[in-house]
Length: 125
Ligand SMILES: [Cu+2]
Image (cartoon, rainbow, N blue to C red; front, side, top):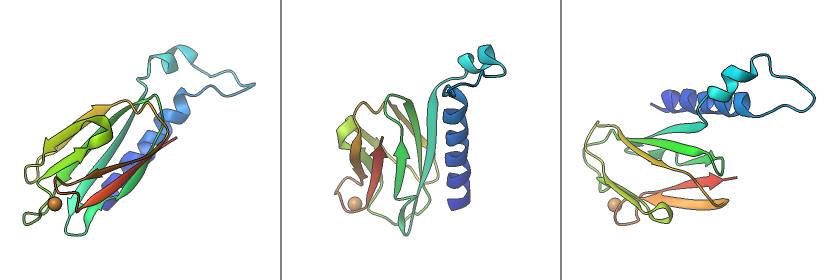
């Protein structure tokens, strides 16, 4: 699961890099690149160790699609709360739950279980 999360994050960097203009360099296929959706995707697994990864970075102003998957049956974290984005979702066992938002402000934003015991962090730049 950790491996999969890293792959997805790597994919995110690629999409972001591809959509950013490079100074003094004409993109080979500007038209195709313009059509690429500007989106960043991250998958977070909830395991016996907590959220994995427990922190990740997002780019401000770009739509973020975060997939949470609870992989552990016995946990208090059967829901996830992102207070700054007014998101609160149930996390059924082994069912990917997708939340989408566009981070509008830079900074550090927390996400946690409903009791704020299991915690993670989003770093927006
Ligand atoms: Cu909890």
